[in-house]
Length: 309
Length: 227
Image 1 (tube, rainbow over the protein chains, first blue to last red):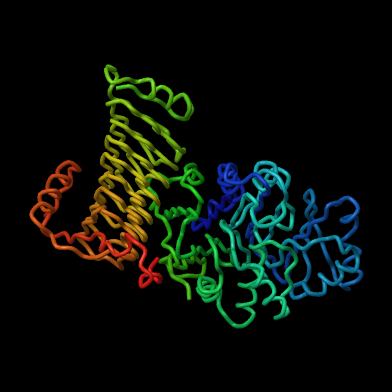
Image 2 (image 1 turned 45 degrees about the horizontal axis):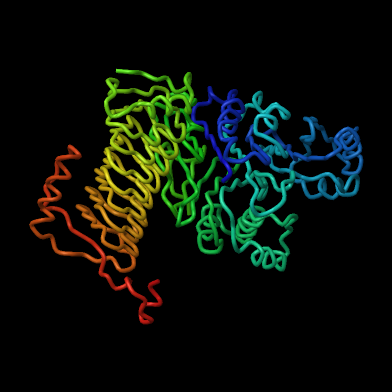
């Protein structure tokens, strides 16, 4: 199973409540998967800065004065905010590669959860309510976000197997389903030089999209071609700096419900996830069509729904 | 009328209360409020009662229904009316995938659209959809009727047996061994009757009938590609 949710706010006055609304939606989906949970929040950009969310299983030692140690190696100012097993580093824009190298040098057991100007990913093994509380997601504001609660089928229950997966700067992916050609695709992508860390099927899906986009595809085009190249079941929700997208495989047996009002566009694996959203009684509620890419963007024209690609 | 607040009473007690109704109950009209998309509401009913759910439902609402009438005043989640034996289910909004799967009898009416695999493996149920149905509808349909006032998606009636399909709009594609058939007077008469029962107005002569070409009933090596 797995449960996925997404919320894209059109009404700026709701932004302070994004974390609260999204956590509540995800907690409702708990019985679709109790193994691990994660949330990606797009909280807005700081000028000239970029963010890296990192994780350690022994945060007390790993994050001790990490900002200063990292800044010394990188030769710049680094600030960090520690939240439980995660820390969000703020580094000068364009320095993610050197920050990654410096982190590997300082502590090879630190994992990078996300990188981007606006994106922060928090994910851990455990139930959505515990994961949301641990990272104080309910206090977070933002323009849009996606979340996932996992019932593991294809690989181990670990932090790195939790969703969302970071697919590139400010991009992330959650998945309900299972990919059946992930082993061959992983080999192919590794031959192409793509870094894939785990035996997880979704990570391969995420790496595939990253690889497509590195080779010039837009996110919409990458999602379109995923319909050809990925074998298996999937409902994907993807997040970008400006918006979020949804695509389902042609068989479309993994559930998906969407709701749209003047205030937001929301996604849930089930309608249950949406029942507490404001004005849901009068929202347009529908199921996204199979093999169709949907995308909503803060940059788009007033008609907020558009097919990508 | 008896009203049950699902959020207060809980699913098990709600269903147990409805299951306790027998054929000669005086409490024949029930209303369930605050369904909040919950699963398995009013499942396994077996009494001539009428239950109206005020709002949208999740998985498997009114599954295995016998005798009862279940009205869903909202949209219905996946597997609604699964294995219905008799009685009636009326959905005011849309229905999600595999509506009425394996249904043996009774009637399901959808005022909106039904999603993919509507009536999959139907075994005698009648389903009337005022809007469209999604892909793979009536896959392996064995008996019963699927009546669609709108359009049907890809692979309608794939690998069907003796179920009949009546579509007023376009069919995107027919599934393996499903073909267009002539509308004879008995089909017009059937449509008139079922549309009246569903309380939906439409001209039976505007429908096209589809059904099994009966080429896949027995293994034939020339059909290997179609299996």
